Length: 226
Image (tube, rainbow, N blue to C red; front, side):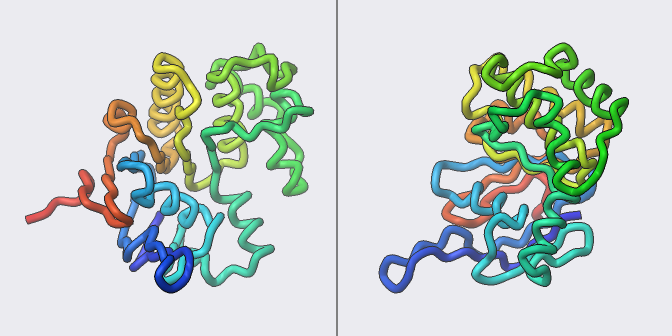
């Protein structure tokens, strides 16, 4: 499903050059829920952005479901991301002038598709926000806004869901509810999920934990070493 080879990302030049990722080789199978943990500046968010095609590597490759992202021109890459990758961000990134229903169905409209009302209703019900379908973002709690963001990420039925610190702006109880929701979606819909988090407690709820240090993978519960 996801494979990286010698994935490297450099920022800056000469003596100011920063090696954010240092030759990362990683494979994530279809249906896995992997949590990426590590201290600030270790490269975990950089890794997620490269997996999602938001940023481009200095060296190496990212292959998702057989497609090498480096082979796609900007416009086809944008379409690929919209159709195959769902993003959940720490800051929610909801459109303030759109209600819940409109925010959730926005990716479909951008792709020229009509939303299936029953599917949208089912998604909102699964996430416990069906009664908020016509509410505006400012009328929602942080946890509700994050559930709207998750619904938006899933509405196109993406192959991969990438979550970048999805509980970073939430209290501990709401954080637990959001990660439990991701766990349930992973189990019920077989979604492949990669979640970046600072929280060891939240990471323990994933089926696989990947620890990063200084741009490299230092430990991976999905890899057995001899």
